[in-house]
Length: 252
Image (cartoon, rainbow, N blue to C red):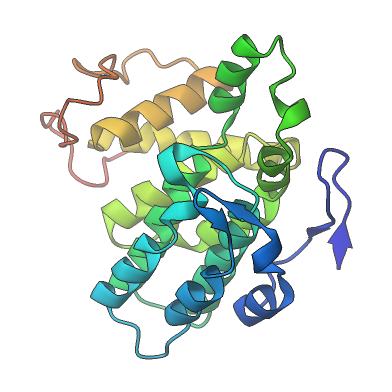
């Protein structure tokens, strides 16, 4: 079943499809990437469907998706690639009762990084240069942003993963996806998780993402910041900030 987003060029699925359906049902050669058409993408994506996929294999295959987000840019092939990765992540999560494995973590990390290439902050920055009409001439950006509710379904199962790094990555993606109006009911729960991340620790970028979301949603961040949280320099190493005396799961 699909719904029609008023800002999307194509129908948006209500549920995540099977990844094979995305792979076989997408006209990849007709879609733009940073280096031309997406004709080579099916071969890259098929490698991720290997039942014996290893962490090095997944890392190499995801590296092959660089043309769909080169220099943090959204291309015509990006929405379909995002939907494929989300569908694969959801399929891998089905029936699993334990922690995410290394391949899951890589897929989740790719999706979380992509999520912040098309978040509201990116659109606001674009609007400053295009007199508030940034999305008018950027159908690929419109299309991938329309997918946020269904992409959220893929990361939601990992919000309670036993591994703190996996939880933080899932939260980073979910916070970006929840900017979509359809996910507004999820924001209070995600805000509580963002507070826990900020109190526990979190790497510099995960802390920035959590603080940005809380601020955008009107939450008071008093007592949640630490020295260094205002440093957005890309040349600062992304290491956890000094321990504030909390364990991985602070007592609330």
